[in-house]
Image 1 (cartoon, rainbow, N blue to C red):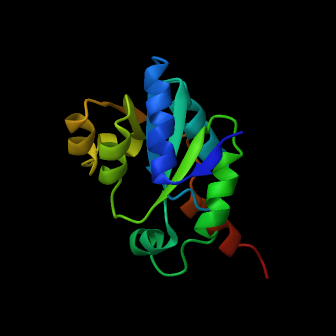
Image 2: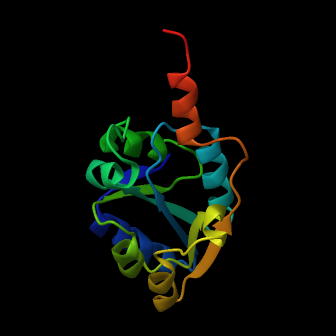
Length: 158
């Protein structure tokens, strides 16, 4: 089981991995209303290296990105849920609008994001390239998204 770490703890963990010759994969996101699509994505990301750190958007940035009423699940709860998943070694909360700072501080070997970025600009691409990280776009499990899940819940009869 993984753990929720401060940025400094994650940097220290990264240095231990590097000393052991292990590859670090970093991904990030909101992970609001955790579902099987998230798990599938994280499992695929984990196969790209020896350890997976998940950067988790804090509540303030999730609301900025996703709009009023989001997140549904508070960041400290989302962090605990993510850390409990088998593919996740560590979770780090961050407040910035992009994961550039996490990438620059953690210097992952692989930076993984969802396959939807194949058709739109990846905001963190330049930061990943600056630190020499391979950028990997992971295909989503079709038919699974938090937005679709919320829509299904809203459509339920009251």
